[in-house]
Image (cartoon, rainbow, N blue to C red; front, side):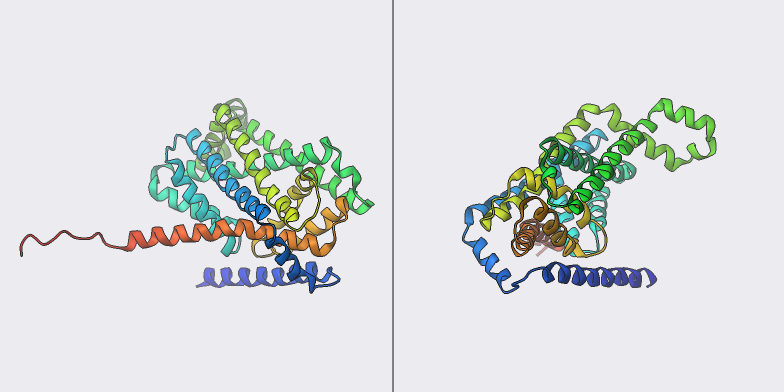
Length: 339
């Protein structure tokens, strides 16, 4: 009862956060009556709508491929299309629940039911899946924001400071990920065991570090998962480029790829449902720094991009309901031979 009350309380807090941030984003639009017109205008660009849906679908497929590779590195062999189905389930729960952790929990729960002997490995594969995603996001930001010099065109000191702060966070995160993988090597673990024997010999420490070190030893698979992640993350971000183009805006792909890593990180904070409001406000502010696109257009494009990804979440819901119905339907019995 207490846990249910806590979940309801968290959901209500996130609902309040969603309302506040959406109000904040919409309050920046001078003529709010034009927002609906922007959605109608997007429908007149079916090619870009199809591109957005296709890019978000590709993100699902490459997300499944990334996780499938990481599972194989842990010697967990499952069919690829089963992993695709679980990825769709995750998209559904991320969309309708209180946070991204619900999507992870759904995938872990379903796969553990299939492979109960690999609980630790399955859980670690999802954790490393997020780490690989963070690495890909950071690399995309650094390449497009600084490698191409996109952020140097930010309009004011506030925008420049935002990009600089993000650079320190993402670059520091990359160093932290690399350091943690280094710590889990057998040599470092042997050194740590001599210094902290009681802690290192804890079962959960042993199982976790061994699971992480698997990805270092299977470095070819780890690099393959990173390659899949780069495609996944790029296609995910470019759905918002397609949304902007559906509205006739001429923002470039590098500009969108410079902005979206920061937008995605802010939207992942547990302060609104599915990042609504937070995504729109951040997207509007950062994109305006680089392009000067009007707030109404930026907010509409952000919502359209969100709808592209929501489409696959709803498709995941359809797959989930279909699977649940199939399992709950008893098999048809053959004719009773006794009669």
